[in-house]
Length: 362
Image (cartoon, rainbow, N blue to C red; front, top):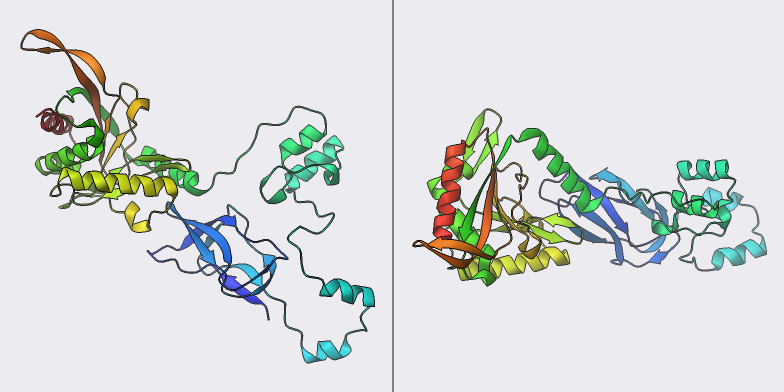
């Protein structure tokens, strides 16, 4: 019997998910609980096991497709044959019977060319036999560059579909750019009294305490109202191979720096390994970002919508400073605060930034 596998409800109120990667192919025989497909939800990838055993009859959703929950994405097993069909079926050719008895292979059928209509049209225009082209695309697909190279011309620029974390980042940044009225304030900070090995955790602590004094920066802009939040769960921007991920450190106002530092390291490792739970990526009230040695003097980061502000720390390096009328050398870096001017006035944003710097310098 054929089993129609529908994209399951993965929880957290999600109504759709992206097919990130198929772990099987048509014709492959699989067992129950074998890895079937990876789907992208929010900013984590979930591997779904097969609920049934048998040959993969049809794959109905392509990698990169965004499909609603409840959509049939793959058919497993052979279609049922009714008794009437069995009685009226013509005698089988011995050769066909032998071929049918052979186990299916993982390789696509001989002569099957995987290419989009656009690639097929370009191949026809250039007189290229697709059957003689070596594919370099995902799942054995022939790309436009493959066709042009086979035609002896210059390969076309590589076209990579926008999918997974990169698609989510693009959508998130575009929305923030549309809706937020950003202004960036910058000031230098002397980090002489900060343990730079715990820099991010120390900045989180300083920001959380200052947010209590400047509550409009720990808020949400909700249409015709400003929602002030009474908890201090701060996001930390982490660069991964898949793109920028923002895990959340909880309770930054009341936990010691040592605990916050342990959380930052755990979440950063999980983000880079792709093992974070969905809960680790939700509910931040304010975001901190620091690119370390790659940071440059300072950045003008984009507000992590629907938050109203984000603080970044630029590259910290030995620079001349004046202390008690004397020039000295100290580890100095620039602190930049980008804020939503619809919610936060410039003077209050500057007051918050200076309060954070005061706490770091003291």
